[in-house]
Amino acid sequence: MAGSSPHPIQSYTALDSNQLIATIERLCRRIGERFPQAGLYQVARQLLALANQSKTRAEMVARPLLWVRVVNTLLIVVIIAGIVGAISTMELTITEFHLFDLVQAIEAGINDIIFIGAGIFFLTTVELRIKRRRAIKALNELRAIAHVIDMHQLTKDPEYVLQRGTATPSSPIRTMSAYELSRYLDYCSEMLALTGKLAALYVQNFDDGVVLNSVNEIESLTTDLSRKIWQKLMILYGQSHLEAEESAVEDKE
Image (cartoon, rainbow, N blue to C red; front, top):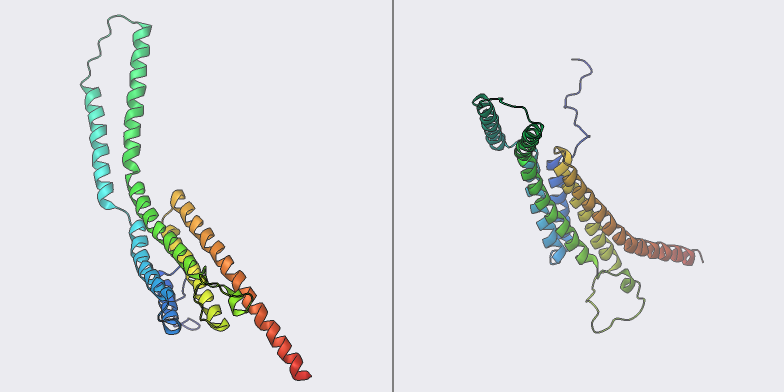
């Protein structure tokens, strides 16, 4: 057909878990090639493992639990059949009308209806609660690794690169150049951003307010942690631009 594209149109309205894993895998290689002995490389490998797990877990959360639905349906049918059977075998004998007895009968009936309704509601929400528990457990792992990433950048202070102040005996050992430090911090920021995207996989095909709130919390957490990193990067970039301007002025002179 004339004018048709030889390649199918790719959807850009949803996260592709395979592309996300490929991005994390590439980032892991980049960190390993530049900082093979750094602890950040091991954290990146752990993030890659979590990415593969997140793909499987998110698909499991989105997939219906057929065995739960079958068991629930059978239990609900049994409950309804029991109610119908009890009503059909009930013998109604009215000898004398008493208002107090009528009120007691109505109250007992309402209590039974509430109890049965609560039981049916519990059964119908079992699947949701199972999926929610699985998703929250997985999201807690992503929240934890975000804090681990932040721990690795805490001591990466740009001030020592700028040679401001002197080190103390308890100061961390710092051997990175300004460029290496900027790459290290940038890798941390990328890892945090990708952690937030992994969390978003769990609500892509699973509509649950509790899980959505947890995902939003992780997104806010990773964004706030990245903001701290970019403050350090802006210090480094500002110093490099200043040195470049000073060098240009000296060349003109």
